[in-house]
Image: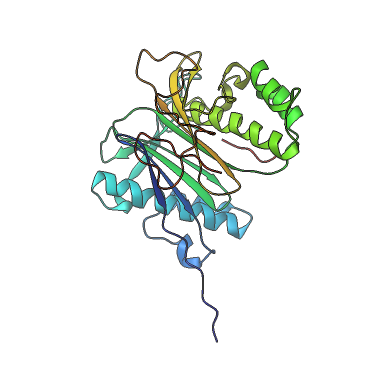
Length: 283
């Protein structure tokens, strides 16, 4: 008898606000057909082939095929017709097509903004159909040297929350650090400045449940509304979107709810739902 091959689950949609969506999916087992997905560009197939571990190649190919499929639905076109590039980096002047500006759709012409993050088989796609700058980050919860990492990239207030008196055990410290980290990553991705910025200057107000407004100083900066996402057990994730003018740094969203303020599957639009390298962290 031939064993059944598991099929990757369909991605789940979280509607965070009007015209702001987050999609979460998990890749299935690697297949040769997946690496040759017809929607992938020659550049994407070549990049997948460069991964040393076959599972990494499969995860990359799956996430980019899903990226194309979902964005094609927004833009009413075929996935294979999408063309991607990067906006210029506002910090270093790296021009279009550079290494770390915000990713963007170059064909067809659109104002839509998006951000894709991947951690192992899991991926997170944030889409702002109204063109506001948006960033996403997902990390897997794991034991981390939180004190050492906090000293390198957290603000004084964040370090006190992660490792100061009254801080939880290692599991709790790792979770707290990753909340800070994913919020920072989502913000710098939305701004398109990569990790060239000083992360210790970005105060994420992580001790607050959120949504929170985070200020990014310097060229390309601004204020970003950051929401923590409850995707699945063992995952920590955040989405940041360019905030309308007038919000104050650290303000929580008007409907932040109770508990940890995270969004979970089934949350209604505008209402968060309660729910229950440094060490491989990359942009």
